Length: 215
Image 1 (cartoon, one colour):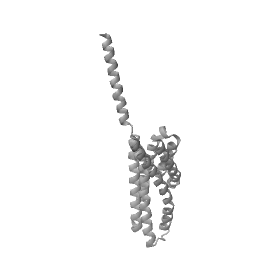
Image 2 (tube, helix red, strand yellow):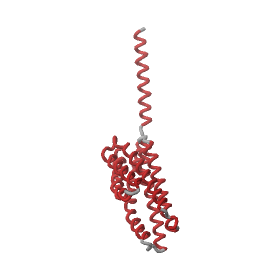
Image 3 (spheres, one colour):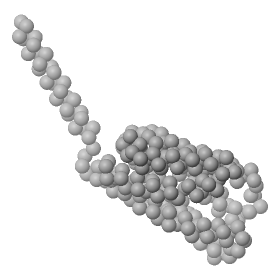
Image 4 (cartoon, helix red, strand yellow):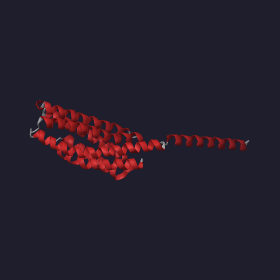
């Protein structure tokens, strides 16, 4: 009787282990899906590089707008460059949405969507100001800076969730975004946030390439 009980327990344990192994195999991403994800994340990193390049002509257009030297031709170019800048920014941030979904980090997904929303808001605001500069008020500018800063701060906190898997790169990107976001929220130090945005983005681009490789 004791032998039968032992055999029954062994059989049950074997059955359980088989079920666990099957479930583990099912949870593992298929090679073709993994390759697709890697390609998408790499593509997001490339869009990040393009976004970084677009930032320089955009800065030139902002200077022309500030000095009120923009012709109608320049205005069309300004809108086109700004819209492309937003599009490339969204495609860049999408890499972190994919990463958040794959690694099951809800905060990274939410923070990435908030970053895209804040970028869209800034784009619409800048284009409206081009045609209706009279609506520019200190309050509207401060509000936009604070919203962008809060979004950046949250994104930085979310990036720190990647530090266990991706180490110092994720930490550096997260810390820079947190400092930049906090600087924007103060409004007075907003210029410092703009200066920090470039190194933060460079690190994030490198981080996406590393994620694509290790995912």
